[in-house]
Length: 262
Image 1 (cartoon, one colour):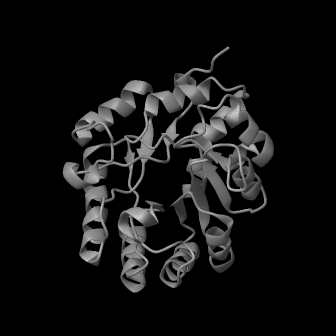
Image 2: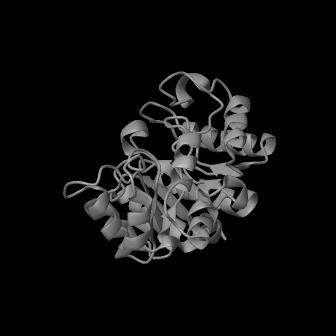
């Protein structure tokens, strides 16, 4: 029997909201055109809350752009009650990022960083000196960060340098190869503060979510869609069709993310 969305609290931990449509909407087919449409789409498919930091599709060379994205997140939060604000940081500006992070944490109750996508905004790899400095400070606050892909090489230094940081890897990917989903799930299972969101490609492979829960434990897997790059509805109902218990659904669809953010 297929699980029903209305039976669970559903938090989409991986979306890309925007105020600047021209440079902030990463939907490949030009939709949604504004946050009103974005928010309606999330509610239409049964998602209760969604999160993710706004981004821009170019190399960021001025920290003022990062601050503007974070202000955009607060403006979205103030207008749409289903949105949980998240923030951006940048490895070329570690001190400015840390000051901004502390301001948002203490003044605005922001607990979530990312998705951080190095190849879009040129933040620096996760194990670069600037990013490691930022992650260490985030770990001291007990924050959670969402990292695009993330290999063992780039993520293990983060875990070692910032033991208080909860890290969510984005995108399982295809199952095959040394950096495929099966290896990534094993990686997640080996580290206490490492988690995986199911956004991007991967869930369309039958039984992926069941496999991930069996390898990692249900407490390690986070629901995410990558909306509007991907369809939130397709991801949610793909997840609901998996063979899991009600308790596993409760954890994956919202309980784990709520626990991580306190």
